Amino acid sequence: MKIEAGEKWVICGGSSGLGRAFSRLVRAEHPEIEQVLMSRRSEVSADFSKIEEWPNALALIEGFAPTRLFYFAGGGPHGPYFEKKWSSHEWTFRVNFLFPAFLLSNLKVSALKQALFVGSAVNEAKADPEAASYAAAKHALRGLVLSLQADKSSGLDLRLLSPGYLDTPLLAQDAWPRQTDGSLKTPDDVAASTLSWVQDVQGANGHFTLG
Image 1 (tube, rainbow, N blue to C red):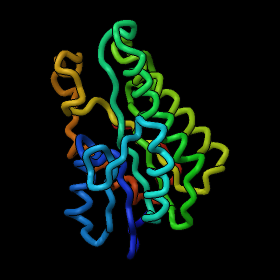
Image 2 (image 1 turned 135 degrees about the horizontal axis):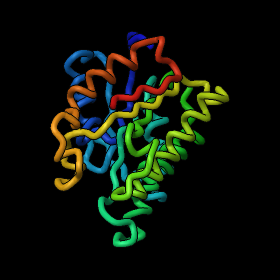
Image 3 (image 1 turned 30 degrees about the horizontal axis):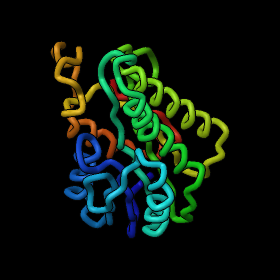
Image 4 (image 1 turned 135 degrees about the vertical axis):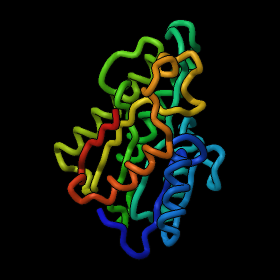
């Protein structure tokens, strides 16, 4: 979907990691695009883990009337599932799956033409015993987006981006990808690939995996 004049983009989870790299790249290459960043630490404050804040976040997005929506927010506990508090798992389910599902169910913006959600090339497709709740949420997100693409009910250019492990502070220092040379990608590299892909009309309603 080519960039047109007057575009307005909402980037959820743009204060760190891939979302931050993507936002910065867009500002550098397309300063004409009006952006709004939403997260706990962005210019527009929103905590996607708190259900009571969801209606307000939805209203803020609808009030901005974006032409594209990008959802980069994510994360979750690392370590044995049974050693983590339920609140940590619940946070993971809400941020990675439940709030995106809420958005897709409730968002009403006539100007919105494209929505992209970020999955995981690793966690959405197979087991990850050190990140069980994160993997469960990413499995669910993939299932939702691919199902909506298949039944064509969204009316959007709905896309799923599935990057591999990224070299960010969110990846635990003892995680195995940090011990394997060449397995990590930088947020800047993935952001560049993402910006190219969202403009590719052949990628409409597609699933882009960056292993």
